[in-house]
Image (cartoon, rainbow, N blue to C red; front, side, top):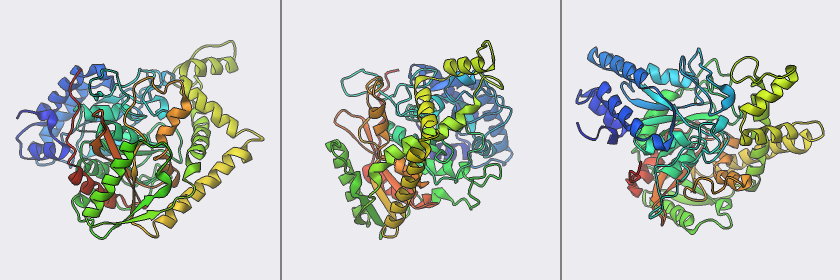
Length: 490
C-alpha cells in the first residue's frame, strides 16, 4: 500500500483493521520519514527499536482478535510526558538524562489502547514559550515555508515539535500540553487540529508541571475526527491527580459530522483588537459565514475583562512556575554543578540548568509572590481570573459556543521576536482566556494567508462540552476544505 504516511489516523485504523497493512509496516514508514526529517529538529529522542517492538505486539494482538481502539497507530509524545524507561527532559538541561521509572497516565492510556511510540518530541523548555526557541535542544523548524522565501519559520510553541511532526507526516498524531495556548497556537501555525480539553478532563499525573492550575494535556492531529479519537483515549478520571474530573468520557468521534443547525455561536467583540491583520479578520468573517450557512445563529457577545487576561496570565503562570520549578535543585536528579557549599551548589546547578526564558519567568513569579507584592500582583490577578471566568459564564447563558481567531498572525520567522518577550507573549492573546477559565478550546485549520501559510479558527465551549466543539469543528473543516500540506524541502 503506497503513501502509508499520507493516511489519516482514521484511515490507518481502517487499513490496519482490514489487514491491508501491518503496524510493523506502517511504523517502519514513519521511522524512515523521521530519519529523513531531522533538519526539522522535531524529535529530541527517536525510539525506533521500541516502536517496532510495540508494532509487532500490536500485529500479534490483531491476529488474536484482541486489538484496542488505537492498536498499531504510531504517535509522537511531547517530551513533557514521563515515559517509563525512556529519557524525559522537558526540553531542559537541568533534567539531564532523567529516565522516569513510571509512565504518565495519559501515555499509559494510549499504550493500553495499543498505540505505538515513535519518539519524544521537542518543546519549549518546561513548556515556556510561543515559538519553540527556548528548548535546550535547539528550535524546531516548521515544515512550512513562505512562498518564495526560505527563511525558517516557527511551528509555534510550546508544543512545536508535536505540531511540526504531525504537519510533516512524521506520526499520525501527537500528545501536547496547553497552559496558555500551547496546543492551539502551534496547530494554527502548522495547519493541524489541536484541542485543549476542559481542565481536569485529562490527567496531569506524570506530566512535568509548568503552571498546575492552567496545564492541560490534549492531542494534535491531522483532522477533527483524528483529534476526537485521540482525546477519547487520553481522557478519563485518575485518582492519582486531585484535579482530575470524575466524569464519564463521551464517544468524541461520534460527534464529528453531527448537525450544528440551530446552535447559537457567540462572537466576542473584545477579540477584534486594534492592529489585527486584515487576513485574520477576513478569515474570522469567513468562519462566521460557514457556520451561518450550516444553520447556526450568530450572536455578538461581550467578554469585558478580556483585555486584562494577558497580564493576569503572566502573573499567575510564572508564580506557579516559580513554585513548581523549585524542586530542580541539583540534589535529587538531573544536572548537578558542585559548589563550595549547599547554597552555591543550588545556585550553580540552577544557573547552568535553566535557559533564559525559564529564568525570566521564575524571577517574575518569585517577585509577584514576595512579601509586599503578593497582594498587589498575585491576589489581584486571581480576582481578574475570576472575573474572566464569570464573563464566559454570562456569555454561555446566551450562546452554545464561541468562535474567534486562534492567533493574531500566521507563523513568524525564527528569531523574529526573540529579543522582545512582550511581542512573543502577545501570541497568546486569543488563547489565554480559555486556560484561565478552564474551558475547552480547539483550533481548526481554515485557510492560507497571502504567503501560503496556514491560519486557524478557534472554537471555545462550555466546560466538558468538547463534543459540541468536535461537531462545530467538523462543520468548519468540511466548509473550509483545507487540504494544503507543506512542500517538502527537508
